Length: 182
Image (cartoon, rainbow, N blue to C red; front, top):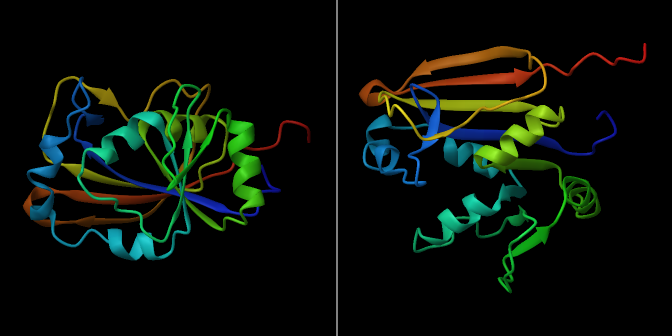
C-alpha cells in the first residue's frame, strides 16, 4: 500500500517459543522479569509515535494496568464488538475504516499493538517495522504472535542486541511484497 502517509511499527515482548500471552491472556511471565531486561528502547520508540492502533483484547488488557500509558497519543481500537464511551480512544469497525481514520487524523507514525492486529497488518502488507524482545522462557502454549499470513513475509534484519537476564531484541524492516501487476 504505497499511498499510505504514515509508517507503522510494532515492538512486542514474546516468549522464546513465540507466544505473547498465556492461553487466558496472562502476561505475568513477561511483567515479572521485564525489568531485568534493562533498557529496551521502548521510551525512545514511543517518543516517535503519534498514534496507536490496537485490537480489543489489547485495549482491555491495558485497562487492567491501573493507569493509562498513552497520554498525549491518539489511540485507535479495531473491533467489531467493542462498545465504550472511553474518550481516550476511537473505535473502528473494519480495517478499511481504521486506515481511512489514520489518514484523516494525519497520523505519521503508528504503533500497531496486539497479536491479531499485528497479524492483520502483516497479512495485508501494512507493517513496516517489527521489533521483537524475546524473553528467555518457554510457555508451551498460549496466544501466538504469528498465525496464518497467506504467504511469506520477507524481513530484513536491522539489528540484534543482548539485553539483561537473557533477553534478546531483534529489529526488522518488513520487505514490501512485489507488485503482482508488473
